[in-house]
Length: 82
Image 1 (spheres, one colour):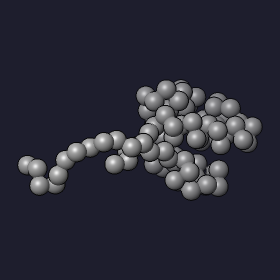
Image 2: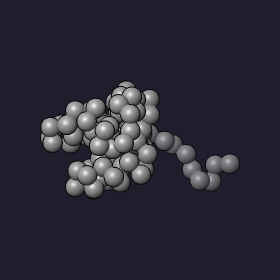
Image 3: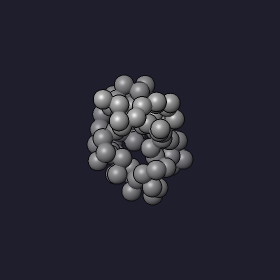
Image 4: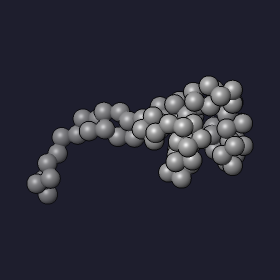
């Protein structure tokens, strides 16, 4: 099963910003968030809201799937387990 990977998602976002010559502070300014918010994304303490992910999808002209990363986890359960 795939789950959200916040650190890789942030790496994707910062790489796209870097391609445009923007550092984390400039990205924060463009998105209307604090540089501390972007720092928290980078450290995996917080994640961008879904609203910001859609905004960045438009800003970077990529699909949400190119921004959001997932990682595989091994979950063994059955819906019949109660």
